[in-house]
Image (tube, rainbow, N blue to C red; front, side):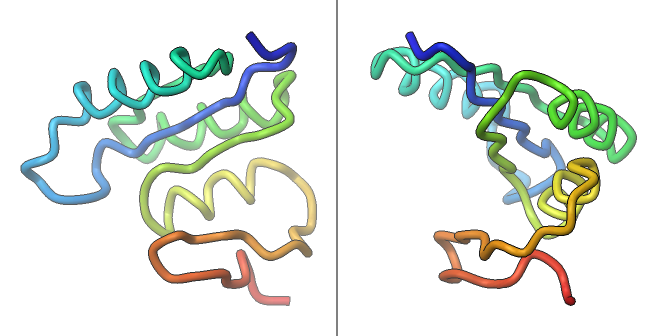
Length: 102
């Protein structure tokens, strides 16, 4: 396992309504575990929970924090970091884009 876990926060409200978020979390966790990567995965059921998880992750030992959701999920994580985000963020669905306006 890796020395520092990767934090993944998935928004339960993002995506298609037919998605089984609990099953998705289990699948993602299994993939990381099979590849010997220590992952700490959380499923946020509300905006308040998402913000709390993002703040905890930003204060935690994580070197990598992954947002699974839409623009609101990404915004919550970048806002929680307390840093000016100057680096481009990769969005596999749309290519690379700016996290926030300068």
